[in-house]
Image 1 (cartoon, rainbow, N blue to C red):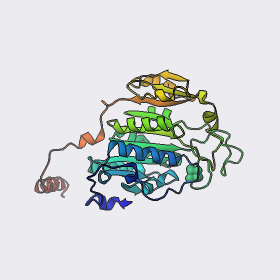
Image 2: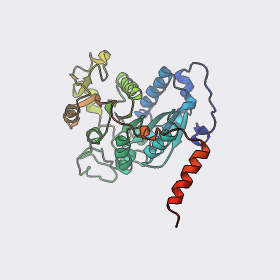
Image 3: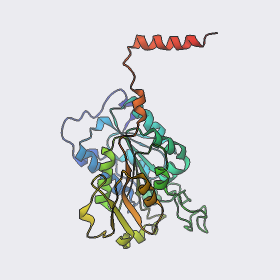
Image 4: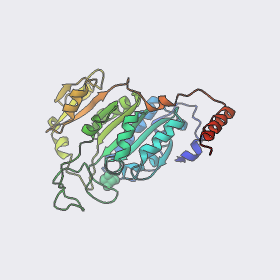
Length: 317
Ligand code: SF4
């Protein structure tokens, strides 16, 4: 993986040929065997190849956590940053290099705990990027502490008698943020659904927030088992304006038509229920994007210096 520092000034890839999935493979992933992060990595490499994203114009940004090792395993530019700070780094990159495709990879501790303020405001800023929340419902890298999405009653090292509080619902919370423009949920153990969701998120014009339910066999192996063993506990939300996965209908018989332009319905459906709902809850490409406020006239360097000097003169004493 190359550093973003270099990417701002030069390119080490300069792709001119058609790229295959293997062209996006980097170091051997060191996640535990059976970890859901492997499936997300594979789906993402497939998306990059199918969309023919140029490696020199693609950036993956992460914070801290197991899933935040993502940029090391994908051969594009990348930035493995500080805990909870992936989104401010990503928004900075996008503001100054709007032509880049920016992907953000966060865990639940990273996004909805220490990074919660950034999550709220990045959603509201609605800048054109894909933000993935790989939610294994525990702190995995630091070895099994309760996170905001850990289910009530689930024992961890920090709450050995079970988590005291009801789990936070990141989809419901994101749908409550002003100017949220794309909110989806998928599961890494259903690869066709995962891929269809990633593709829709990438093609969305704005901030695409995707919560990916992610197995952590090491610490939360039991949490998603009931959904895996009983497909009837999964409900697919389908719509021509959202995603449609007819190949899954034989297994996932529980389906619902949901128009993702209906925010009220999206909020109702996002509330915790006995079933887990997968698909696009909400999508609106007409909402304002922060980078549009930066559409300033193109000044020369001399003009910019002159404008700055005028501004400084206002404060001269
Ligand atoms: Fe994956 Fe859990 Fe292992 Fe982390 S601890 S790599 S989340 S299985």
